[in-house]
Image (tube, rainbow, N blue to C red; front, side, top):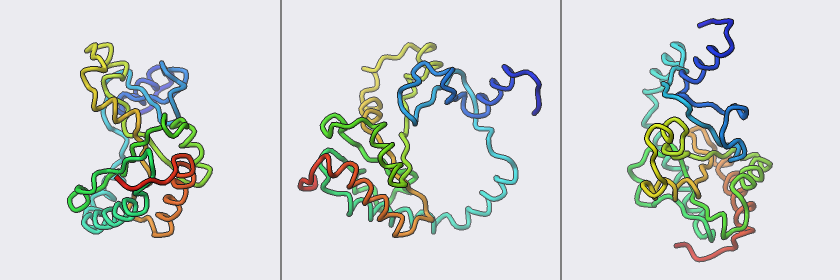
Length: 199
């Protein structure tokens, strides 16, 4: 699609991406963190072109191998990151069945004494990218204004959001990549939290 209308361009860009924006000038809470986005309207996922769809279709033949590798990575993370005080790992019982789309740490940032944004910046300096999955839907401007939900209605979602930090997880990760992530997490979070017996 083409247009010479800037406002229409912005509306179409949001519509193709679930109604989301990361434009600081449009955000209600621009200082929330580097992961932050807002949904100001309904939208869809129209970001993938046909060529990418064809590639994705061919990748399905590799799906079982990709999942198997993700499970290996999750196992290594779980073994090597167990025992960091203030950090809760995903349940071990999910290892045999989960496809491990994400590997999400839950960090007690208050007890460790560092903000999530600072942790993300420190890890980035170690060459490790992180993300927050996900910002609670009831707080998104469109849904908040339309349905008037309260935080007390979704305690689990908000508890998860306050502590969530996803570390790299993709099937082409090498063991060296995994070690880089583990070393960075231990350096940034471990030196602050101290070592304790694994829960």
